[in-house]
Length: 308
Image 1 (tube, one colour):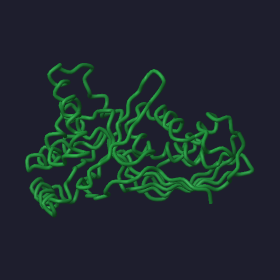
Image 2: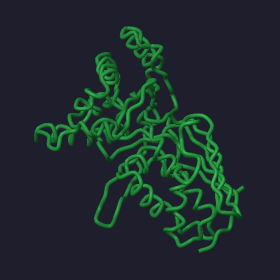
Image 3: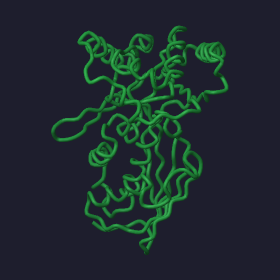
Image 4: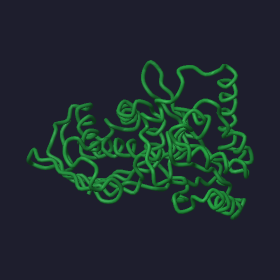
């Protein structure tokens, strides 16, 4: 395998995982994107320019996650390594449960796909495998690559994913706090075991969520109930849990976005401005309107990559 293109660009969506009961399995691509341009250099130099989210905080050399993903993808197909120059324009909030790390990994893999002489060697199945290995689970990688809503799972032969046809009435809204939370912290408070009744309840709701997303948006409120992870995480994100609880009390299908601390609300476009009014009422009542940024990104397709 040889390198063929020395300048490529990738655009990757934000993602929200879990969607309530679909713990570590379901995800949604959001219309909020990071964009990465990559130049292959004749030298061994590596430089990374970051603007937007993470500017001044992220590594600017070999340790940058996009660079590491490019390296892994090139090794996967036996392509030679190269010097790299990256320009990353980030809009996905970091440490907020919106898939920023998955976006970086997918950006690197798809950049490598466009750089090599046989891009089909890194098409979705192989790209998804590499991204899932980086992430440790496939629930964010799947919608980042495929777009829309996805269900992912892992078999002895590796990770797999399938898309769901999301009903046109469904609109995702994300409430993003100023504070951040590391995924490892959010996972660290989960118990090793849960009651059988809670597992059965959540399994039923995850099945119902598929029906709600695809055909019956009127079922979204009940379909986003779960008992496996969100309440346990309340101790490390109390403001998030308070907001989720308050939104649900006024009928909103609100869940923790990924590992948090952002909140995802699955609204119905046919409800008009009732969702907006409910959010404003809740944010005002809790006195936190200035502490949460509200994004209405809508659904997104999967990552796009091109040679320049």
